[in-house]
Structures are given as structure tokens and as C-alpha cells.
Length: 294
Length: 236
Image (cartoon, rainbow over all chains, first blue to last red; front, side, top):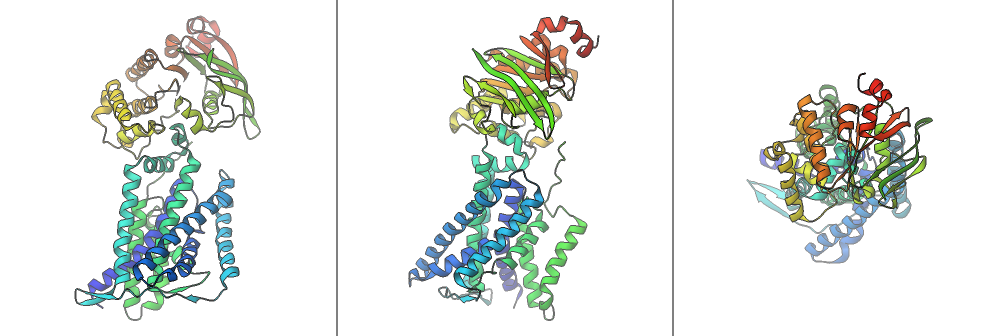
């Protein structure tokens, strides 16, 4: 294990966390809620891939087919949960929304368990092999994760900054009422935010399966909660913050796992950093203090 | 026919009756002002008319359409817009992006570009600061931006909620001049102000609001000369 491969593996893992963290942070920024069911969308995506991956013996077709199917199912699931569970609670107390989100999380897990059983199902993704880079061998899946992950984050950033809809998202996140005065349909923007977040989660599902090729109903919990920590570390509500937080957490996790004697403390260290961040700078690395509105 | 017709409007905050049956109208081409002290219900009227706060009773008719139960974004689509109290420009967006948000309902990019130029002619200061982040503008510049942003949508009815609040006397004069410019441009104006003197002077008609009720109405001139208004709002 040299530094380069450590860096690439860490950033690649971080890209997965960042993609999930983006979903948390965008939904928080725009709908002012913590969607704790977001991690379970990854589980939904993983099952989608489990069923779609066999459509072809050609590895490229198989991967492309399963990611498209996963995006479809995840987006649908994100929009449905928003419409059925969260929309009726618009304007309700944040605690009610939070509890609902936790409920949705268990609901999705329960449905998956009823449908596919509680046992982990092994999944055979096409073997993409490894390549030699800077004197070490690195799996192609890791490289794809890193590069595609960064491209997706860049695309999202450009979308938000330079399109009419993206501007509306920023506007809603800053001042919901003023955005309505501009003619923005806030419910539509919130739905779209859930759709985008869920589509990114579908990619995260595929990338996650590259490293751990098995599917179970609780698969989304741990990456979900870690990505949430990443979003908070980066500054919840901030898109670049989620990217930085995610990549940082991935690097730290990879270091913990490779340093002898440290690996069993990985989780403690990661969440320790979250606690430290909350003590030192509760708004996160790139978080902004919100103006208090009277 | 009135462009905006509000009838017996009632709004509650919880159990508190903030508007106790408000009726007024604004005709095409007019400048109409609602004056009243803090807490009289001016902002509540503005937000309720445009659909940000639901009305408990009464009707709001705009251009012949009943908009009482219409959500805000649909009302805005009908050609009504508002410069809200406290300006509420998007602090984290650039001046240019704020103006583009004002044209959100339109997808005609050429027209939008022309409109940005038009706004910059009205407010040259904004033209010089298009790429600047709105949060870094001075209070006066933010007020200009809020007004420019509202005009991006070519409203038939522009509602302004306390546009002179927190501005220096010089800027207040500028704001009232621009409001008259807007009217000359064909925009009907509904103004809410605490600065009764300045706003009555430019108004065709005005209403005096007290505790959620309209207690007096008349032309701007009549109200300026009314003893009650002089005592309560014009400092004797």
C-alpha cells in the first residue's frame, strides 16, 4: 500500500459518501428537513442493480443497464416518499418531520425484508479487473467511482449555478417566501431536489457494490449515517461542503483501515471527528450562519 | 373596472384576528397607498393578497379572476408582483442572478437580456455591480435591486411594502421618484408605507389602516389635509 493507492482508494470511498451527502445537504437546504430515509434509497438502488445486472453477458451493457434501472427506481422512490410522507407535513414542526423520516427509513427496510428476505444476497457484478497505476494495482471499479463521482459533483455544481432551475433551488434554500414572490413553485423545486438526490444515491449504490458485492435490507444505514456525518462536517446546506466533507471522511476512513491497530477504531474516529466538528465549528467547514428572520 | 378588488378580507394568526374585514380596490394606472402604524396589518394585507398567507374569509379579485385561494407562484404568473418588506434580495446570489430570478416566469432569453438592460438604465448603480454578490450591497442598493428584480417580470400591478424603510432621506426621495417612473411606464402601484407624507403626496388614493381595519379613505390630497391623518401620521 503506497500513498498514491491510499489516496485513490480513500478519495474513491469519499466520492461515494459525497454523492450520498449531496442528497442530505440539498434536501436540508431546500426543504429544511433531515431526510433520514435517504440512506435507504441506496439500499433500494442496490436491489434494483441486483435484479438488473443479469440482463446481459456484456459487462458494459450489464453495468449501464443496471445503473439506468437503479436511477429510475431510486428517483421514483425518492419522489414518492416526498409526496406521500413529507409533503403533507409542510409547515409542521421539524420534530414531526424528523420522526416521519425515521419512520420512512424503517418502512423501506421493512418492505425490502418482506420482499427479499433478511439475508444478504451475494451479487455478481461483471469483473472489471484492475489496472497498474504508479506501481500499484488499483481496481477499475475504484477508478470509475472516483472519476464518475467527481464528474457528477461537477455537473451538479454547474447545474445549480448556471440554470434557471438551479438558481430557483438556491433562491428557495435562501428565502422560501421571496422565491415564491418570483413565481417559483416551491413544491415542484422540493420534488426535483428529492429526484436529483435520489438519482445521485443510485450511483452511490453501484459504487458501493463495486467494493462490497452483497445486498441486504440494512445496507443503506451505515453509508447513509456516515454520509450524513460528512454533510454536517462539510456544512449542511452547502453543496461544496458535502463534497469536501465526503472526500475527507473517505480519506480518513481509508487511513484508519490501512494503519495497523487503528482499523477497529475506524467508526469511533469518524464519528469522533463529527463530534469535534460540532464542538469547534457547529456550522461545518463551509456552513454559513443563517440570518435570523423576525 | 378595478384591477385589484379586495372584499371583506380576514386573516388570522392562530386565534388572533389580524385583518378584520378589509375592503379596498386599485384601478388600472393608479398609485394607491395603505398607511398605518406598526402592527396595523399592512404587511399582512400584502402577503395575503399575493397568496403567501391564507385568507380565512373574504375575496381577492385580480383582473376579473378570483385569486383568493390561489398559491403565490400562480398569482405571480398572472402579472402581479411584490417588493417585500425588508427587501429580501437573495443575499448569496449575484445582482445579475437576482434580476434573473425576477424573470423566473419567463423563458424568453432575448427578452430577459433586454429587460436586464432596461433595469440597469433605471438603476445605473446596479449595472455597475451586476457580478457582485447581493449581500455585499448597501441597504439603498439592495432596495434598488429588489425593485429592479420585481420589474423584471413586467408586472401590471406592483406592490411595494415599505420601500423607504431604513433609507437615508436622499434615497427615500429617489425611491419615490422611481415609483412614479414605474407608473408612467404603465405599472399600477399598491404601496404600503409608514412615511405617510411622501407616499400620500404621490398617491391618487389612499386608505388608513388601524388595528386590522380601514378607518379612513380618500384621495391622497384629501387625506393629507385631514386633521386625523395629520395628527396621527404627519406629526401634527
